[in-house]
Image (cartoon, rainbow, N blue to C red):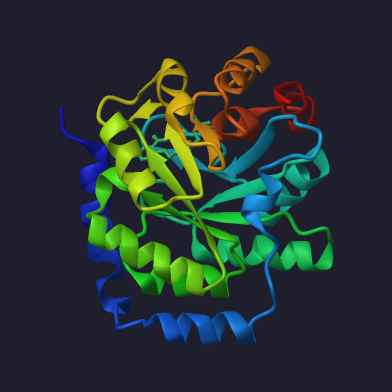
Length: 264
Ligand SMILES: O=C(O)c1ccccc1NCC(=O)[C@H](O)[C@H](O)COP(=O)(O)O
């Protein structure tokens, strides 16, 4: 079966080609110094009460689910998640496959500036070049995504250095033990186990149970994808997850606050 992630990564490199230019670590540090600070993504993933933190995702559609909530207004959904008690948000900014835009992220963070407290936002996109890190910081993100399987070790190191210079955290996403080993070697501080196999679109929480116990102490562990019920979240917590990343079930929930609280 064709691998969707390979297709998306090839498209992403094509999509950003016209925007690509050299972006140095110094440029990103200077940008960070001149822009208003952003709230810490990592800090919000460690709840003082020991409960499971929830990263609530804004996602209109996806390759696996098709249409989820195509007409949703991102800043309105962000304020619903804020009121529901989300610890962090994940905002899809890829348009072709997920129906999101970078403007969604900018309008979400601008909305929080008018309606504090700001909830830290992950720019959920397929990162391949530091220019995307710059755009994420300008749009008010607190973190970027690094999909280990899709990148060389050199690309991972460059993106991580760039994110750190720009004052952003990085969520390293893994799906296998060798990918987890690479994330650990890169000194990731936040590692997410994606329960969804992006080749066949099957989600299996057993993957979190298999990999999360191998995430070192001191590193934040996130279980991603396929969390629909309190029982799913409890499985993630039982194997050591500090947080869950939840898209489809929260996007479709009539009462996101009740569902989110049940996860905790
Ligand atoms: O969700 C997909 O179909 C998908 C396909 C290809 C690459 C990435 C994909 N999803 C990204 C995600 O990681 C999920 O949006 C996220 O973990 C939330 O998952 P869910 O709660 O199952 O919506």
